[in-house]
Amino acid sequence: MRFGVLFVGYVLLFLCKSIDIFPDFIAYLVMFAAMLKLCHHNKYFNGAKYFLIPTVIIAGIHDTFLFFKLDYGDINTIVSVLNNVFLIVYHYFLYNGIEKLAREVKIESIAKAAVRNLYIGLFYTLFSLILQLNLPIPNEFKVYIGWIYIFMGLIWIILTSVMIFRCYMWICLEGDEDMPKKEKNKIKKE
Image 1 (cartoon, rainbow, N blue to C red):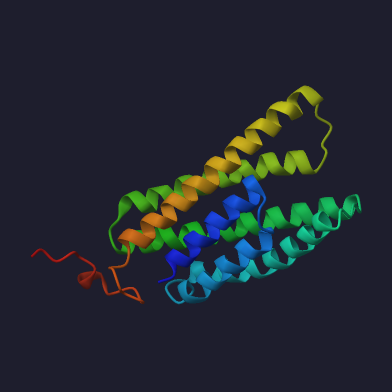
Image 2: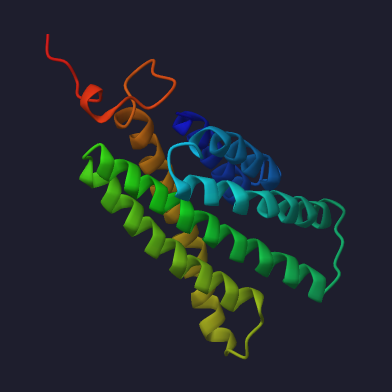
């Protein structure tokens, strides 16, 4: 189904955001490759696919700015804000797609994890926008918001990666390239 490829994309994203080994757009390209297969399973994955396209482009622009140490002031801010907006909309579609799929195959814990991760992602994006827009907030609060932002981002990526790995392990049977029908998805007792 491509949940394994999506999991690899999130591991790369974790390495991009926390350790900064790879450019972000590589992780988003891997996620896009996964969405090309997942988009056939429900409309939410299709929506996620379409919101990853501008995310890949914007991340490429942002990575170029960082690589060449270019600082265009407001343009950098606009690119970062746009990236966050497209990412949260992508995650809205991704989490809703996972929730619907998990409910179809009656795996309630994955459906609940998708809803939880959506709320964490919304708060993470809110903190990110507060920091990026240079709102008139006292510096003491910005320090605390910065720490919350870093902590929440790492927790969000880890929880999303775990949820996607659980999708990989439990939604499709081993060796299945496409999701089987509901009645075939039960584990056979020997």
